[in-house]
Structures are given as C-alpha cells and as structure tokens.
Length: 570
Image (cartoon, rainbow, N blue to C red; front, side):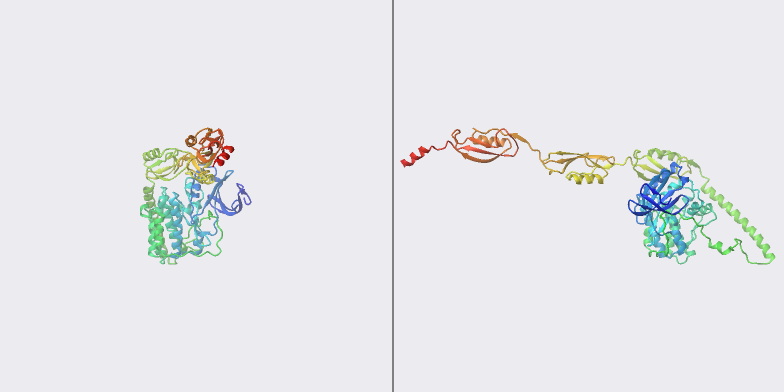
C-alpha cells in the first residue's frame, strides 16, 4: 500500500506493524505537511455494519480528547470499503518494550510513569470516555521520556464483536479487571484496576496473575489476591505498594473512584523523569506488537532446555515414594482445581441470564422500564448531538440480544437532539465584525438591509433577525440591519414674500426649520417689516432642521431730489 494517497491528502510511506484488529502505516499529510499514523481495520471487521458504526462513533468521541498524554486522533475516514483512523505519529517504543529493556523500575520512575498515565485517564473520564484496555502495549514512551496513551474508546467497539486473535485475548486478559473477566460492566474502576496491573508490572517485572491460558488468568483475577509487590521486589516503598494494592482491589467500591484520586496519591511520592531509551525505534501510536506470554521465574528454575522437569537423583525406594507422592499431589491438585472451578462456576455463571433488549430509538424513560423488567441496570456514558430527539438512546452496550446476568449494567449513549447554534448578540458591531462573530458560532451572514436610527451610528448593526440567544441549526442565516443614521424628513418650503417678518419666523419654526440670516433692503413695493425675498427659493423640498435666510423690506428707497432740498433748507 506504500505510495497510495488517501482522500487526496494522506500519502502512505511505510507499514509500522499491526495486530489482531488493524494494520498501522506511517503517512505524510500533504495538507498540513506533517507525519501521521493511519490505522486500517482488518478485512474481517469490514463486513459488520454495526461494528463499523460503533467504531466510527467511538473514534469520533475520542477525537474530542486533547491532552499531552493522549495520542491525538486527527481524522476518521473511509476509502472504498476500508475504514481508517488518522492519528498523531509518535516516535519511541511502547511501555511493554520499555519494561523488557529496563526490567523492574525504581519507585521514582514508576511513579512518574503512573502519574502521566493517570493524567490521561482523568482527562478522558472527565469527557465520558472509558479506555477499557489499559495495558503497556497501548502506552507509548517517547524519546523524551513522555507518556502517550492510545486507543481510547476503541476497545468498546471491539468488545461488541468477536476477538479472533488469541494473542489479543491473551495480551489483554492479564490487565482485565474482575468485572471484565466475568463479562460485567466495565467503567472507570476497570481502568483504575488495569492501571494498577501496569504499576505492579513496572515495579516487579511481572503481571500479578499468570496461567497457561486466558481462562486461567481470568479466574485468578476473580478469585485470587495478588502477591504484594514488596515480596517480589523489596525495594518497592510501602506507600507505593499500598497505592497499587488499593487499585487492584477485587471490589470496585474499594478501589480509587477516579484517576484523579489515584493521581493525588502518586503526586505525594517522589518521582523522576524517565531516562530516554537509547536506540528506541519509531512506533505508530496504535502499533500492536505481538503479545509475548510472560515467563514464570518459577518455571524457569525447574525446567531444563528439553522442557522436562529435573528432579534430584535418589534410590529406588525414594523414587517409588516420590512416584506415590506425585500421584497424591496430582490427585489433590485435580480435586482442588475441580472444586475451585465448580465454586467459580457457581459464583459467576449460575445466575439467571436475561436478554438485553433493543434500546436504540427508545426514550430514556422507556429504556429504563425495559431494563428494570429484566433486572438490569443502566449508566449514561455520555450524550451527543444527533438527528434523534433529545434523551433518545442512540447507542447501547452490550448490543440488543446479548445474554447478560441479572444485575449487570447496560451502557447508554443519549441524543442531545439536533446540534443547535446559538445566535450571538451582534448589535452595535460593524458588518465585518458581525460576520466574524456569526462564523465563530457556526452561523452565516444573511441579508443586509439599511434602516434609519436616531441612536446607533451609521454603518453599525441596529438589529438582527433572529434575535440573540435564539437556537438555530448550524449553518443557518442571520439577517442584519445597518444604521443609516437618524431618519431625515423633508418639508416643502412655502413662499414668505409679502408676509410680516414675525409671521414668517413663526412658520419656519412650525416646520422644524431654523431661521437663518436676516438681511434688510429697500423695496418700492413692500412696506418696511415685510419679507421681500428668501433662500432657499419657495416650493422646494428641504430637510427638517435646515436654515432659511430672509430679506426684509425697510421701505422704499429715499428720493434723490428730496434729499437735496432738505439739505438746502438746513
């Protein structure tokens, strides 16, 4: 597949690895010019429509997580029948390889790593995402010594189908919580338990429970108490041992009730950053390395290279006695196993099984009733926007038709209804600023109209349709009205010629006009005090508030002969 380009954007460079669920490739994003890792679902998963739907939903939910200790999901895509996830490309190695290289870690280093993992889990849990498959294979150590947790939410999609790869089952069962081992509900306490197993392995070099097959390991999770870490590694501090043993409690309510609570206890202990691993190789964030069965130190001590047990040499009597002893021990072991298996079967399997009802499409109230009728509990994992009405079940786990024991919990995802965009208040903004504010709220600028307004300055938004805080579908249009300033009224200017000045001034005021300059002039026609001219001219349209200039008569001009006669008489 090298050289292939997905969606005209992601160029596949090389295969990084793969596991039972997916193949992982290193790729180059042409659009953003960065390296990414792309996880392709294996072909056997591509024909299960329900699995694909759940896989894409969980991947999109996980994509909302943004945290320095979580591998980012950039994109979820489809190319033909192939389903893929585009993820952050992380260089380094996974924690399983790191532990193989370093062996049991000192307290300070284990505490540092545990804090990083706990921070990632706390962030995810706060956003309604449960990992369900915390194990060293899903924890990456960068060359700088930082931790990146990957595959959030993916385990939930897988658990609804069938895991066909024995290695995957065996690889995860060592980190299962007791409730996962018995097929019950797995929530936040399950992630806490799995982190406890990882911490245990970090300080002891081995997982708490080992057996020849997954069923044996699962039964030990259910029935046995783990050996205290200090018995395997006396260098482990009592404080760290107490944290690990609390996380590994069989009873959920006695574990830490949140990753933040566990983190708080870890932060009270001394720590030091992880030393970079020389020669650590690049690893895609979802690189699923083949599981290597943990070796038992006890078995290594008693097995020869040919695989046969070696016993000290002795005489015939001793050999005969030893033969009978072996037979007796074998019988006791077989009886013990049979009895223990019977008790475990009674405890965990002889319970009434009920069929999980179809809840998708039901209201929360209807779902609650259906579950109560079958003595099943429920938990709302999160709510998402969808085209279904609010409080409608849009996904469930386990699926309808699955057999579950009475008292088990069914996980629900509810609809928030169609996604809505809230109209912002854009009054008083310029057109450009209003458009930016609408786009920020996933809305589009609609029609732009202009209106007069006495208060809002010109070119600013006077009002909007719909009003602020209205909920609309994303991408809806919002119309705006820009101010053209106060409304300007016009009046027809009458003729003031022949009117007395006082009457003309009164009319000007009544028309919301302003008296302007008043000049005087001789007039042979109009007596003194009468308007003989005006500006603007009569009968034109002028705006209210405009000024009107008048010319007022001071009577006829003096006669030249009369003036001379008057002078002579004097």
